[in-house]
Image (cartoon, rainbow, N blue to C red):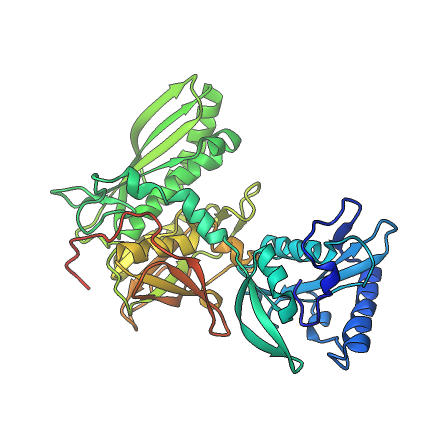
Amino acid sequence: MLGEGSVLGEVLIGAPARAHQLVERADDAAVAAYRALRREVFVEQQGLFDDDLDWRDEDPRTVVLVARDAAGQVIGGVRLGPARPGPDVGWWVGGRLVVRRGAGPVGTGSALVRAACAHAEGAGALRFDATVQPANERLFHRIGWRTVRPVQVAGADHVLMRWPIGRVAALAEATKRQLGALLDGLAPGGPGFVGDDGAPVPGSDLVAACDAVVPAMVERDPEWAGWCAVLVNLNDLAAMGATPVGILDAVGARDAACVRRVLTGLRKAAAAYGVPVLGGHTQFGVPAALSVTALGRTDHPVPGGGGRPGHHVTLTADLGGSWRPGYAGRQWDSSTSRTPAELATMLASVGRARPAAAKDVSMAGVVGTLGMLAEASGCGAVLDVAAAPRPAGATAGDWLTCFPGFAVLTADRPGADPLPAGPATGAVCGELVAGAGVGLRWPDGETTEAITATVTGMGPATGMGTA
């Protein structure tokens, strides 16, 4: 794909590779053949390097993909991996693309480029860069790459190009984009709390929250669905600084056995969080369905739209636990391993700190939820990817788009006290800015677009009287 070396134009004319071509991850023998081909082209033929090996070739995280012809011979390859030594923050680069002149089918180089893009995204990258010789810029454009700027590599002109990874935007589109149009005229939450995690009940100190669990999850993992139905609602109340006082459930399923498993998970979660089940509704002989309503109390609800440009953004998340079995990369389970005291401390943290704005990380993930907080606050946001707290067992792409057990985004004036969230980890990892959408800021100072406009279309939470 991508390389700091020349891409051989005659094999990169954009035609699809023929079916007998194979692109695969290289074993040791294939890596040796790939490096020999690299040296032949970049050192001996082009004189671009005295030696084209560098630290990336020694980095165990570097991946080499090779193309083989019908006889199994290596006819090309490309390497890719994290952009810098140290922790992988989701920024990957590709390079040293090479294809043997006159060998293999037309499109071998393109096939390697596409495979590299797919591998980087699968490895959790949210930024994927390459330096390409100017003669091959059009080829990369045809594949879908975007030009960033001219650069120099080994004293020769190259072009920095970027593969657009739309994972964050696609998640926001799938989970939140239609809300504004659907809820037009309802103003859920009321003035100042439109689009919030819960709704202050007029004339009282009550806050109500309601969430449903997708039917497929109820069918597949009933006990986990019951646990999560409690968790998500109590996190919604916590983000508004409310103390939970009780929950109501509505469950439907094909038979009593399924309902029993759902209620088992719900009861376990309610006991762990110390919140009573006040009542609900149960129906048999119907497709799976589960929703929970939670009630909490606070005299001063914390809004999701209380942020302002210049406010610092903090992510506070429970990094304990692991991926829920069967939901790797999508649902992080930290809550089932926590004590009631630890859960209570995390739920109470927003109410104790009272930041200017707070939102529980929802189905839209960390970045999408930050976009909703910014939208409700009438501004945009920038997230410092490397500064965001993240478990060691999760890639940046997975963590920033998953549903975590406990994670809350807050916005407040610089220097504000952190959330007293006990076992959870908090760090300032961005700020609110003028404009709209969310940018991802990287260790080299580059900012890439993650969300270019509003997330829900519901707009600012009007009627705010505080800054």
